Length: 228
Image 1 (tube, rainbow, N blue to C red):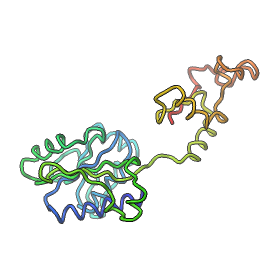
Image 2 (image 1 turned 45 degrees about the vertical axis):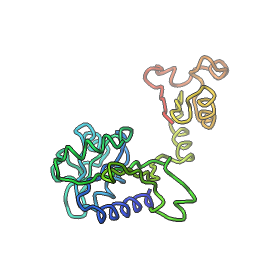
Image 3 (image 1 turned 135 degrees about the horizontal axis):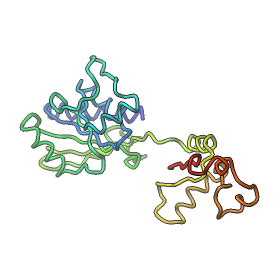
Image 4 (image 1 turned 90 degrees about the horizontal axis):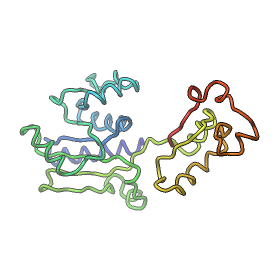
């Protein structure tokens, strides 16, 4: 994500030259994308506005005391003085951005939103053009602009395997590329060697190898599910 953060900085600098009074909105989930938000905030020397619920998550994740190079706090639950807002990634559309812009009551003349996701990766174009290869969707005479930036903090395949091997979960629940039963089985198949199958009565392991430690201690207390 280091290269992606540098691209975010480059795009923000370009947008600020185009319109100095620009509000920047960073799309995010309930956790993650903090580094992307920080990269943008450092360019603008502005705290990032977050809702109270997200602020609690940031504190739990160890991000609560982070500051900008200038010494300003990185996060704020007050929109006043913030040129960067953190907003749900799934709801970043031009209608929402237009609403954001109007809600500032003239404090900003344009709004630029980032959708930081690995799905934005376009190998040939971005390898050749760098940040200039990030696609932008502009509407409302250019007052609302949305960039797709290839950014991901997901664990690698080997890291996921190492986690499964360490935890020895009794069940893995896939959440990506698993819309069908075949898709679920395909995703889980990569980790079957690290799953404790002895508590699953639908598998021969339960009858061949007997009860696992989870059974002896109480399955409700010791069973571990892993989301992948």
